[in-house]
Length: 165
Image 1 (tube, rainbow, N blue to C red):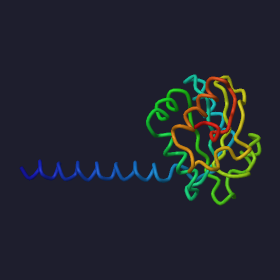
Image 2 (tube, one colour):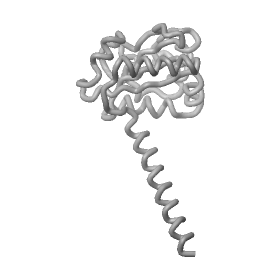
Image 3 (cartoon, one colour):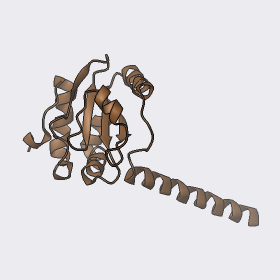
Image 4 (cartoon, rainbow, N blue to C red):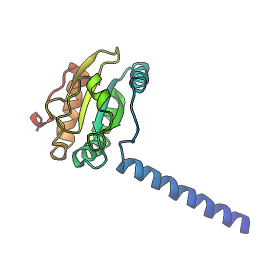
């Protein structure tokens, strides 16, 4: 009986720790660390294997718009569409002092965050949000982000989510 109770307590503790890890990942979507060309090449390979568009998203955990975009990509119809059509690599820019070389190498301008660049499964560049299209993400919801994603996936062009009502 004591062994069963000990096992139950250990199991509950493990589940509690796991839920805490999941919550921390959700609230801190941008992992710190240097992103190299090798990291990009691996992400392109995974996207190609899965026949998905690669979205490389530059942002930071302190950025409200970045966190809102990350949450919106996990909501309702947007979540399913995003998971079915996109492979995502999130890149932390810190306080605009991290991973700037890789942004430049990918032709991404540091005007504002979040900023994203998209690659077709064949590796060709679709485009980037270099005109601050995603910067006001806190004003966007599923009604704006889902058609934005569909335009990229189906028409192979980057638009402004603000145009969708």
